[in-house]
Image (tube, rainbow, N blue to C red; front, side):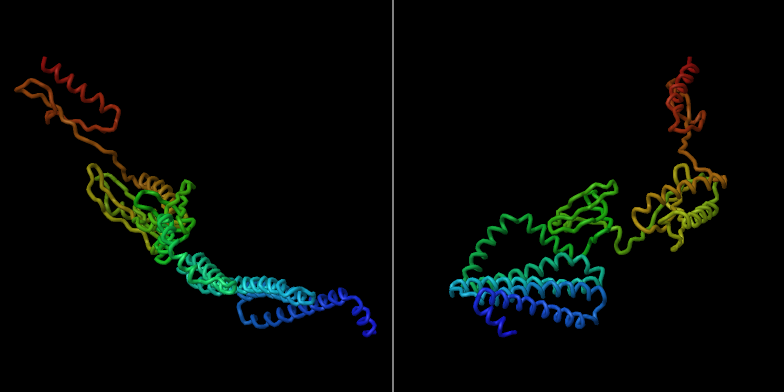
Length: 387
């Protein structure tokens, strides 16, 4: 039976070639299946996430390599000229080289990603390290390719050296921002999701650390794009370093008739009660009160110091806490005074003109509308006395 089929195939060369190609494809499929099974056993000791991603990369490289092997062997079954075969060999070589370098880059990035994920400080280096890995493998592949094509690398390096000077001058600002971006990633003064404020006044959350610029989202949901060179040289306040928690200072003014100890007790009690109900207000460390700045023009000035979770929590905390403090002070009968002044009226006996002196006294609110009519009325009264 086998001899019969072999005789039929021998009479038709193209059938023989197709049969051999079919056998090559079947053999490549079996070899690929065996290779996957072996790789799966080899990577079983890895954790689940690493095992899955590594197996995906290795599965992707097996079939392209086997396909190139099938194509290379199949081409040799046909009666082609030596020149054509040389061209095909070069193409296959370039394809194999590209596949190996590409997947070698991916495997390297896979292991580097695992190393970077172990530390929060190293996570911001993920993008630049992946970029540099791709560049290194691309340059290495280009050097091998040029060497095999007969291109002398000495002339290439000379040309690149001369051209790099012109490129550096033309892209001076871009390169400055690029290296500033490298510095920002290595020094890590700002991180993604940090709330920062620049010396020029811009502030917001860092949403992207790019190679040329850094993007900030303000509380009004607007985007601010800052060149990396300016960010690297600016004075930056980072409200998330060394930790997101921060102190909040609330000024409270009460009447001079108030008992300072009672005021301090009321403020601490109300703040501790609010800490269980207001998101972002912390009870540990405990809030405290200081009699600072102290004696004001018309009030006793206290400062309530408490801790909040993040910078943006201060807005809701201040809003709710001030309302609670005001209601509690009213409940305790503690007065919050408004500014007051003593106004003195007198008549100058020598000049006969009215002025301001110590003959009469009235206490007024300088911010009241009635103050504007008080002084002219007093002067009119003084002029009537003179007549």
